[in-house]
Image (cartoon, rainbow, N blue to C red):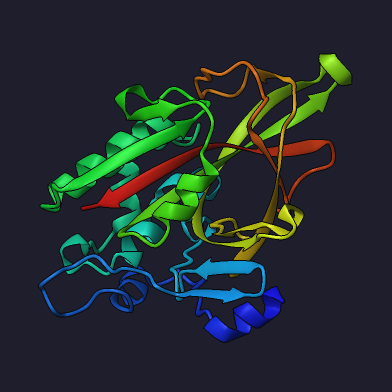
Length: 276
């Protein structure tokens, strides 16, 4: 069923970033007037509602030589910004410009810096009527609203002008029953681009993403399962500041092709950028 939906939309993806300006020009219009695009590509089959943003940019972090392991935040934000098709956001060195705003380094990008960096970049480009919100387990200053990502909001915000960055935390799971623990090693940013909702069987629900990691190409269909219990812990090498100590209510993610043996991926955060 879902393959039919994919074929229907004939989604185009762009995976090369060898020439940033050439890729960028595919998305920016020459018309200087700007109205954020409203995405309306929703299709419904019997019991299944599906929505995908067609032609979503899919730049890869591993095209940034020397910093490829640390640039998932700036590249995900660049994909989101390119999806807006706003000529006022044109930048000949978009990813590195965003990385400077985000203060990205060899520890990656903190959630707070990602949120503040998106805000400062948009303001620098003359876009002032916008909102940046973070939901999740990490510290994010005034951008944070709640500790658990709201899947209903992800679904409702996808068709609106703006973009959504998801953060996956990679955890080592130990223990059983009441003694389950999730120890976070590091995080990763991706773009939310769609969903599939099966009203008859929630086990078939999918979250659809573009992932800047080199081992992925095009959209990935992920299943989410709510975590019933467990304690969250920070690994000593993870520099992100966690403000949630219980895993209950977060979502375990399956469908990522690069999970290591013994790893568990949790959807532990989401950044909403809404252009008003």
